[in-house]
Amino acid sequence: MSATIETILARRSIREYTEAPVGKEDINTILECGRWAPSGLNNQPWKFIVIQNEETIKRLAECTHYSKIVLQAKVLIAVYLDQETMYHHDKDVLAIGASIQNMLLACTDLELGAVWLGEILKKSEQVKAILEVPDTFELMAVLAIGHPVKKERSSTRKELAETTFHEKYDEKWTGEN
Image (cartoon, rainbow, N blue to C red; front, top):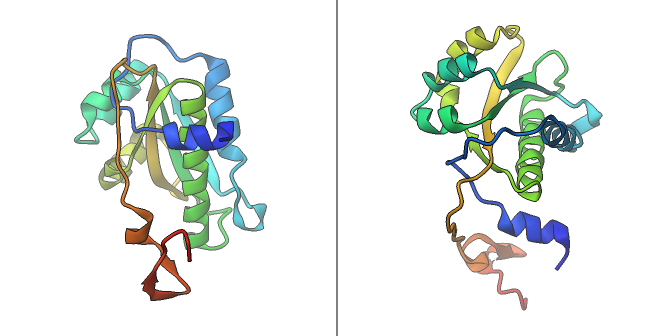
């Protein structure tokens, strides 16, 4: 199995972090991986805001039910869709999803923990005010990142036959079709 596939299968949403700081080199690597995601017309519609200031983190923690996760994180990355560079909203949102996944996989490969926070979108206007972003920026997610607390983690997935079909909807994928 390739290292890429191993990283994909090993990725977990990590919600507890140690006090150890995240180095600038690791942050730059995460951002580089995010910016190399595919996007339609190569328009790269994303904007990233790296947040490390404790006071700003505290203010952002007030914007989500997952404040404990936000407060433990050593780095937050707010991911925005830049509506001035987008060409098709849905396609650009998908590109940003790919960008976020690239960053999450980079965190796994760097042995950092990360989680994609979407619930914070309910308070996107409050987040926008805290981060002083232009009105043309639409919040897509906030990533919480840190060194993971060591503990056993597991996850499950539905069987392929529950989610995958062969040729038509009425024929399940068996892997042997």
